[in-house]
Image (cartoon, rainbow, N blue to C red; front, top):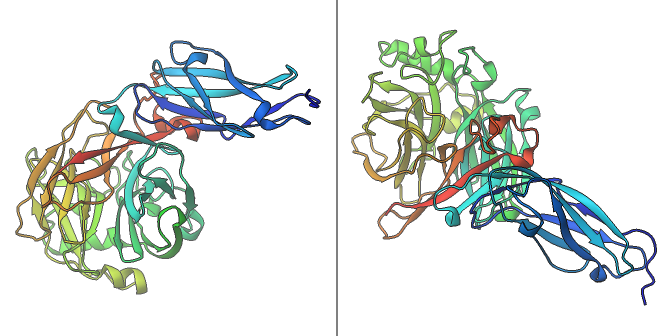
Length: 432
């Protein structure tokens, strides 16, 4: 006989949840249940109703586990929104409910091999921190997020460096490179999308990695805030070869073929001081079929450590089939992958490709994969580079979904009201 008294309670670890039609794995929420005088294992948890059966109804909800905490998973039937009512019932028949606000995005290709990182939609740079975890930057904020690389769901940990950077607005983080325990993060350095100069975007800063995997911690280091001006002066002194002065002029949009926009950062072969800055714009020359541009900073370590003036080495122009740099990453063997895309692409309707490169100015990039297009978002981040000489090597990429209409209501992902509904897609591709 039950000694329970009162009404049972149910609370959710998150009131909002996102899923994907046909997903191999989706995020879940935890339901915590209790009733005075009753053993938690005697409480039944089920889905009672759904407001939009075409998206997901009670029969699409699975509750697993026993005791005080239960795992709630939802299998999406269709794109859109629905409110799912979850019910806890005690041994005496008393019950209580909680509402889970659920949003489902449309199916994507290779769904079984796709994961979604939630809490942010505008992934812009990624750094592997070992043991299956990655730190991901967002170009709409100054927050860095730690994710389990193999699972869909929310970040394990976050760091907001706005206060240390002394800014209120985003610095538009677009690239990152790691040397030992030091990570360099670089802003786009360009104007905003309306062509206005935003000082906070002219920034490079460092963080120190402590620990690894799920135990990773980041500590703020130093920042340098005049790299854009130095690049313009360097180009002007060299005969205005790349048009940096015009590309940074007031009113000039950054993402045009003759614009100025940084999207990649990586160190040169065998170096902890010389780094390549990869440009989304301009192309060289600034016309269809032009080459992608890298500019090397030969003393980036000193620039950040002591505020030294940057020294620039010879530029590198790479034939990426008329595409420009969206990310740049190497492995410990100095094998590089370049994620290439159009300078003006905001989604996957335009071509994207992966190129192998040896990191040398006279090296010729080799295309190793054309990336699938048509799904939401644009390919934006390389997590790490496998051994490109071993068969079957796979690289993990992440999309920027900020401009995508994920749920079919015309709302851009970056403008969604709830962070749990924002997400970037990650997938693996064979490159060797």
